[in-house]
Length: 141
Image (cartoon, rainbow, N blue to C red; front, side):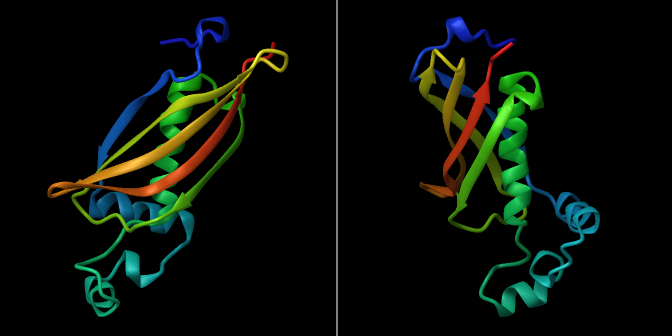
């Protein structure tokens, strides 16, 4: 799908992107990113901190959100700004679902401001490990 600025409307959805979080994902992220905090690698340490086991890095979850935005934008160079608030942990086996919507269009700058989030279903509730995310995507030539 190629996004065409002239076809965008405020309120349009950014197609969601889902992923199951695995120990292998988190270990690889820790090793490549250099964040070897034991909360992400050692179940005993994570349990001592009150979690049921290791948790994913917040930036791992944000990277998944970034992949969602990049897929929608079509070119990572279009993403001018990207931010998010971390609100709750992500556990192994969670399915994280990144998504968003077009909040505002700037016709003069040919840009779209996106409202973004990552959700997780836990039992009968939906949690937002990331909310109040935002991206500015430029479609200027």
